[in-house]
Image (tube, rainbow, N blue to C red; front, top):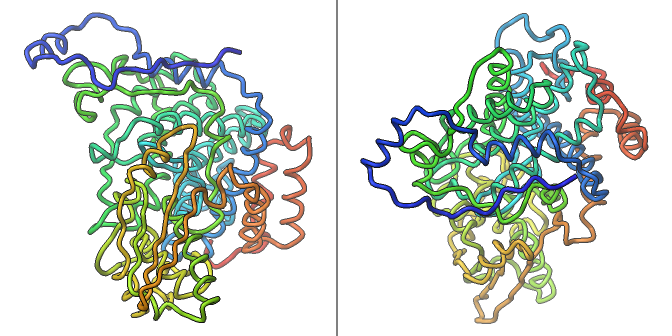
Amino acid sequence: MPTATIPATEPFAPVMSLKAKRLLADDNAHHDFDEVITKIADYVYDYTIESPKAWSNAKAALLDALGCAYESLEVSAACAQLIGPVYPGTAIVPDGFRLPGTQFQLDILKGTFDMGVMIRYLDHNDAFFGAEWGHPSDNLGAILAVSDILNRNGERRIDMKTVLTALMKAYEIQGCFQIRNSYNKVGLDHVINVKVASTAIVSWLLGLSKEEAKVAISHAWIDGHPLRTYRHAPNTGPRKGWAGGDAAQRAVHLALLVKAGQPGMKTALTTPRWGFYDVLFKGKHFEFPKAFSSWTIENILFKVNTAEGHALTAVEAALAVVQQLKTRNLSVHDIATIQIRTQEAAMDIINKRGPLHNPADRDHCMQYMVAVVLCKGAMIDTEDYQDASYFAQSRLVADLCNKIELVEDPQITRDYHDIDIRSATNALMVTLKDGSTIEEVVDFPLGSPKRNETMPLVYQKAKKNLALKLSPKRVEEILSLWELPSFLEKPISEVIDMFVPDVPDRDI
C-alpha cells in the first residue's frame, strides 16, 4: 500500500499584509480540509504497516510503557495521589477501563488520564528527538483505555494487533512532526503532538469515518495548547509528569464530541489571522522531510537508564569517568572542573544553575544527573531524584553541580538533527586539581536502536518493573505471552486483566 506522503512545505507562508489577511479571513467560501489534516487521516485509515522491526519494537514499547506505569505507582507517592476516581463511588465503573497496577475500573476519560500519567510520570518512558522533543508512549493512555472499554462493552472487538497498529501509527504521527517542527521555539509544549496523534487514532478505534476523523483532528489543532513553562527554570514541576495524560484525555474527549455530531474547522491550520499557523506558529507552515510509514517506532529511543533523554549519554560518560578515577586511585574530591559539550536541546531543557526544588526539577538538570553518578559511583536511579534521596540533600552533589559547565557544540547539534545520524552526544572533559584531564564521549545511549544491547535491556527493565506489583509467576506468564504468535489475536481486555494485581496495594 502506498505511503501516506506529506510533501515538504516551505517553512514560511508567503508574506501577506494585515489588510490582505483580513480580506482572506472574511472569505466564507467552502474549503477542503487542510492538507496536513487530510494526510494524517489518510495514513491512519489507509496505510498498512508490514515491517517486522516495527512490529517487534511495538511489542517492546508497549511492555516497557506498562512497566514504567508500575514503577511510577511504586516509587512516586505524588503520582499515586493523582490516580483513581474523581468522585467517591466511581472506583468500579461497569465495563470501564481496568487500570493496570490497580484495582480501579475507570470511566474512559479518567482512565485515559491515569494511564498516561502513570506511564510518563517518572520520565522513564521512551523518547524521540528532533526539532521538537517528546515521548510517543504518552499516546498509550488513550489507546489502552479506549480499546479496553470498547472491547469490554462489546461495541468493537479490539485485539492486540489493532492495539499495536494504533501504537505504531500514533508514534509515527508524533515522530514525523517532531523532526523539523519546533513548538518550543514559540514557547508551546510538545504534548500538542500527543493530542493530535491520539485524536486521530482514537477516531479510528471508535469507528468514526475518515471524514469524521478529519473533523476531530481539526479540533485538536485549535484546542488551545499548554506553554512549556512547567518544564523550565524557575518553574519546573510535576505538571510535566501529567501533561501527556492530560493531552491524551483531551484527545479522547474531542473524538467523542465528534462522534456525537460536532462539526469541525476545515482550515484550522491555514486560515489567515485565526488559524494555528498565524496565531501560534509565527506564520510558519509544518515541514515533513519524511513521509508517514513506520520510521518512528523503528528508531524509538528506549530509556534503559533513568535520565532525561538528552542526558542519557552524559550519565554513561560520567560512569566511565568514575572507572578512570578508580584506576588512578582518585575520587570526586580530586575534580576541579567539568565541561560538557552537548546539543542545543540539552542547553534549552536541562541546563540549570541554583537549587533544585523537587524531583521534576532534578530529573531535568544535567548537572545533577552527572554529579550523582560521579558521587554514587554507579548509574543514577529513579529513587535518586526523589525528595527523600540522600543525593537530593547532599552538599557534595551540590558543590559538584557548581563545577559543571554545559556548552553547545555546533557539530553535536548538527549530528543530532541529521536524520541519518540522530546522535545524542555528550562529551565530558574533567579537569583534575593536579591539572590532568579525563575525557569521555558517548554518541548513542543504551536504549538507542544503534546499540546492540538495547532490546535485551528493555525486556530486563520491564521484568524488573512488573515484579514491583505482580508475582514472579504472573510476570513470566506475561513475558511468555509476548513471545507467542497468537499474541496478536488476543483480545485487549484479556491482556489488560493480566496486569491487574491479585491483591490490592495500599489504596490503589
